[in-house]
Image (cartoon, rainbow, N blue to C red; front, side, top):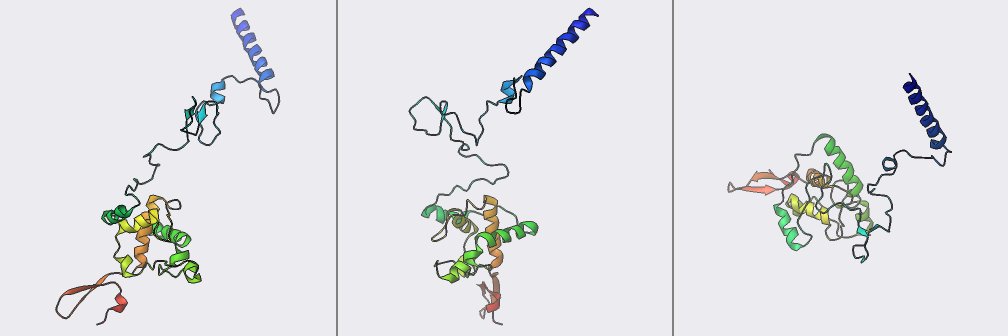
Length: 219
């Protein structure tokens, strides 16, 4: 009985001490029972680093730890597709024709979302139908805007079109910051839906000649 009384008194004393020191005022929370749990020692990506321990300058000759908050080279975000590794040069552009679109056909919600992204990012130059007649094109302020419905672009490989969206081409800058890898491939698929479909007609000698616009096929 005496032991229980002593234990109870000890617990009440600790509780009273905690109450007096734990909530001094709203600006000062008082004593912290486990400071390592309250003040994390882990690096936080968007917080300022203590310049006496860390530096963002890799050429800094001091003893600080270099840390630039960037992901490790080669890292792939969750849900992201594998990187496009061809270089942004003439050889990379040539090799891009061999790259196949890794996505299944564009249907349903993905098709609607890609159409929305095209209207936001592309239609201002290329026009809603891809014919190169967007507001910036017709204004005369920017020239040489591609008409994506021409045979040149109908025949262009998916990989080459992706390469152009990824790195930019001529007057068009890169759209990699605006569209993730999956969206860029989906954009290629959507552009295909704007282009005239290839059809085949039989010519006089019985050979088959490809055409790109069914409206121009004569009986």
